[in-house]
Image 1 (cartoon, rainbow, N blue to C red):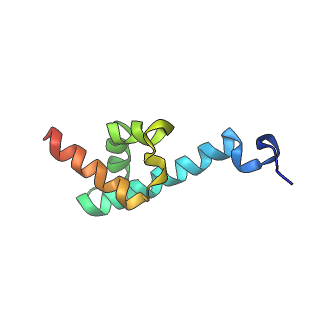
Image 2 (tube, rainbow, N blue to C red):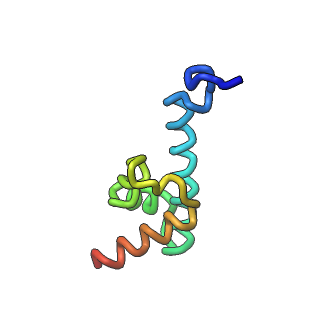
Length: 82
């Protein structure tokens, strides 16, 4: 029997936002270690990036990739703008 989306709590926008926030935190920790900077600074840098915008944009498909891959995408973005 097929469940409707409204019956699936994982499809809830609130749950989806919690999951995304958790992922962004994890990505920020990875970036802080890679760049040897404070986690809060890494979080601020990531939030202001095109990579973060792409992560939120479902049409890019970036949300399907792992956190390490997304961190690498951010590093490549930073290298291009430097």
